[in-house]
Length: 217
Image 1: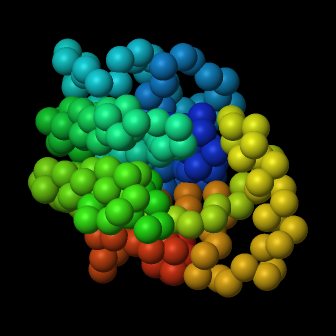
Image 2: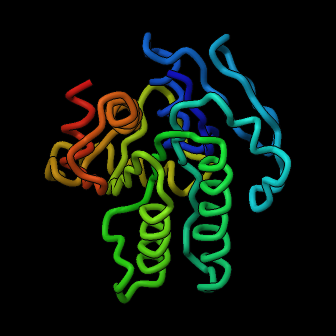
């Protein structure tokens, strides 16, 4: 399997990249980045593309790949709805359209627990509208991951400093957090590989579904 990874330098993306590199079923990972990053595996290729809103002329780069793992995301904290919509809905749909035109079969999107296109929270509405747009695009398979708390493993860290402090504190409390709320970067990565290889009975995967998909790999 040949996969495309967007958001590979973020916390979730780092975990997905690690599992792709470790998997015997992944032949190649194409990381799409704004700036080239260090990659230690011969499996990993990179394409630098600064404008994630405009893929004109670059769709051919995605030809021959089986799946895309879309791990780009941002916090809505301090943002207007227009700003968050541009960085979430518009960016995701622009990339998905380019991937679909290249006949990429499977699109896996990291959304979030509580996503609801009709919800009262701004971020939940925008994420929900993004989910709906992806489901209507006509990929052969579309999977929407809605994780809650994700514990980073294997030395992976967030690029956001206060996130790392939060994860450190919650890491000590993890045994007290109900299983239905907790994932790890390893679990998310394995679940993405699982649904890309074997599919899943649902398009929208909540925390327990993600755990189940990872266990089936």
